[in-house]
Image (tube, rainbow, N blue to C red; front, side):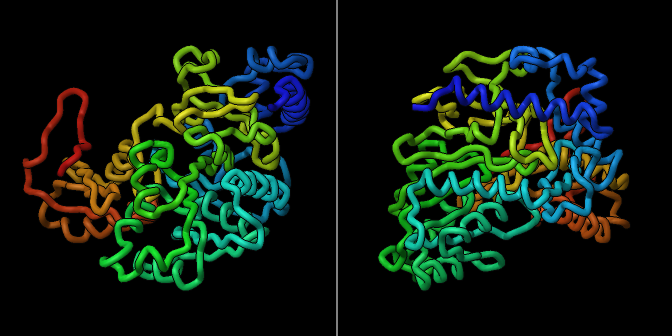
Length: 419
């Protein structure tokens, strides 16, 4: 049982110190707080913090990054003290955001990831973790891997085919797989005749998934566990804030928020008020330890169900969805508006449509465009390159006949699911 009164007291001491420090800065939060009328004497109790300190939105952070490129004005140390770089997969504007961390902030996030491994009951010196990630500039891949190297044999699987990854897991006796839920499905479906790698040759008995909500969806979870004969553990985090939650063996279906590292709220997105236990709302986070690039009352856009179990704040059912619309492609969040923002950079495109389908248990999309014939070939290559650079994904672009795509007079529907 967690003593919530003691936890809240510790959180408040850190929140108060953080607000006082940021009020003296000339960066993002110093200006934001002064604009909100906050003074050093304004926030002396938790209730005042909740009443007076404004929420932070992704749009604000993006605007700050654009105004003060490339890292924004929210760094609390001299840039020479930052040693780690990561980048989001893209926001609703289609513009990824770069994040820099000091060694101290990075270590704080590694400590959070070690909680993920502890929750899954991994044994130091015994378990071997295979990472089926591409190891792009996304924070989750790197923090998960580096935290694992402190206690376990960590086996990187970047740049390999699915076949090669299965063979490597069998050859080196991996006991734990770390990947997205959809990729766990895809790999699991290859076990046996499709790959020549039999289940008996694999020692994987635990699968830690992240990057999309499938790990807490009962049907997806059951399918993965059946394919692998292994236990699934869910986790979630964000590049902007870090690793946020983990799952305990004894509490399946609940993501436990690491409240020592985050002050968490679950709010009604329309009123901003905290929802009651058992209610659903938007997850709002303040990072207490990643002080070199802090976020205060950050509206994550994650839709969750608030629960308290043995004094722990948990997200029952994991991250249920997003407040805004998006699709997850191989662990990367892609927003419809982000696609449009890129397409609109090419004035030659007359109209476009995104087709979404499921191939081998993974979501894929194609971009259909109408353009004048004399510029089609070169434009297709440029547009595909821009999409690849923005999302680190290959998104095929196909030319369709002029006039074949719908024209819209009111709200456009340019995203359709096809069989």
